[in-house]
Length: 359
Ligand code: SF4
Image 1 (cartoon, helix red, strand yellow):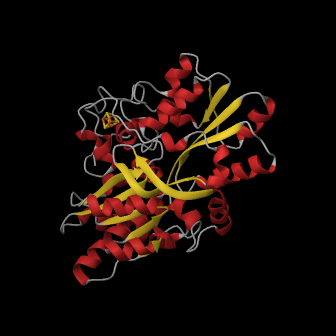
Image 2: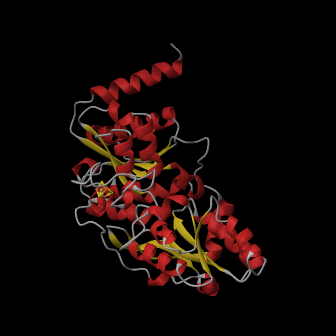
Image 3: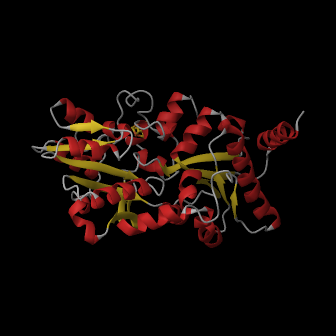
């Protein structure tokens, strides 16, 4: 047996045999939720260890008011909404962008925000609006787009922003959730911001943060390390810290160029999180000097449930599991989603259903 397979066997044994007081660790990032399901990591855990999905899927936390505003824009004459694919099926108050497109609205799906530059040059008389959702990971790409728009003086492109940042929502969860003992910190976010982003949170709330990657072994290591850190804090008083389990990609300080570019175009603002409400300072908007590139993002403080039985809000806060929702897998499926958590491949309900995950 090689060293690494011996270590993996030891970690799996500890995770399966743990019999102390319950420990709950939240995986904040939607990509981690997907990877944990894909690799069957939750199935390795003792009944006393719990992985809880959090609000890190950007599509899942985008409020209905934002979707409705996109639909309104897409139905205006000479206006095209440009978006990533998973946002198109998220329910707004009455319909999704996909349904609006079926009724004649102008909606185009792209793989990169930079694709909008080509569209704008091909049709200079058309007004294009990019649906700019995402976290710290995606913000640099929108900043790069802004750089091009400003440099090339392209006037027929705007952004409708619903950008979010991680520390305020983690702070909110620590103060309101009540059942989180530690966090798997999002590796993609940390690649931009640096692992040090989470140090003040670890100190303030006395919780360990394991910056995790997305491969099976590195994720297992982060899961094991974070559960162990909670146990060691409880049993020996070892101060919880931020541990970087993704050093091949994440550094302490992150990507300084990306951070500078984002600061150039965006500033912090309050943001509305679907199902949660407004969290102070948890968003990013275009700075006032770039207001001409904003398609009306400040008007988006509305959030309504499509189906009152939907429990997305409780799931995003780590207070319920997808299986607790009466619509899970029956009234709500990936083909007929009632809530945002079933739409995106990173959404908890989608993942739990597709991988038969129960915990
Ligand atoms: Fe909402 Fe559907 Fe999840 Fe239920 S199963 S919480 S309706 S997304």
